[in-house]
Length: 143
Image 1 (cartoon, rainbow, N blue to C red):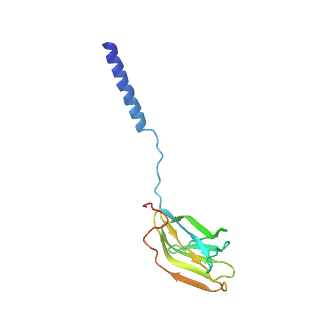
Image 2: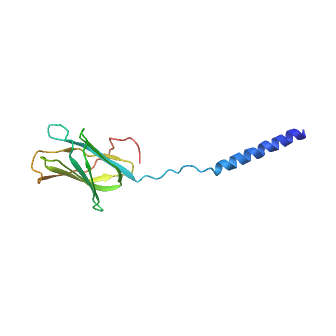
Image 3: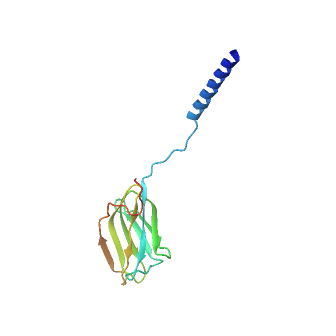
C-alpha cells in the first residue's frame, strides 16, 4: 500500500507542476484593431473600368493624405485606414476629378466607395455629397 500511496502522491505533484507551468506559458496577445479599409472601383459612364487613375484619401480631421494608382481592373484599396472621417477623390487624364466627402470608417469596416468619372477637362471637379450607409455590404463581421 505504501507504494500505491507514493505513486498517487507523485502523480498529484506532477499534475500540479504541469498545471502551474501552463499558467505561465506565454500566449500570443491579440491586439485591438482600430482600423478599417476603403475600397472601390473607378469606371466611366459606360461602365468601362479606368485603369491607372489616381485615388487620393484625405483625413478630414488631420488633413493627412495618401494616394494610390488604380489597378488594371479598375479597383483600388486603402488598408489599413484609421477610424475617422475621410474625403476620397479620383482623377484620370481626360476625365473630371470627382470627390466624395464625409466617408466614415469604423473599426473593422470595409467602406465601398465607387466612382464614375465623366469625360471632361482635368480642371473641372465634381463633388458628390452622400452619407455613408449604416449597413455594411462588404463584410458580415461585427467590429
